[in-house]
Image (cartoon, rainbow, N blue to C red; front, side, top):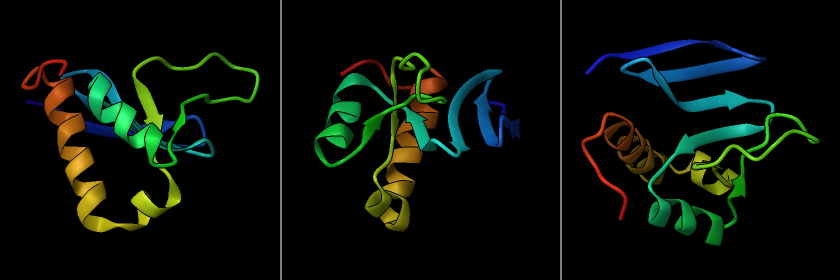
Length: 93
C-alpha cells in the first residue's frame, strides 16, 4: 500500500495507492468512509464535504465535527477505516 501526502487547495491531501482519501482544507478535515461509517459521523455532527460553498457535495466524504478532530482515539480509528477502505481492504458495510 502506498500512502502519500501532498499540498491540496489551501491545505493537504492524503492519497492511498494514488487515490485521494483525506483532505485538510478550510472546509475541514474530511475522510472518505464506507456508507455506514459516514452515516455515523453525520449523525454525530459531521457534514457532507463541499470544498467551496457553492460547489458540489463530494460523494462518500464527510467532514469530521470539531470534537472528533480533537479526539485522538476516535480520529485515529476513523483515519484507519478511511485508509483501509480506500486501499480496498474494507468493503461497503
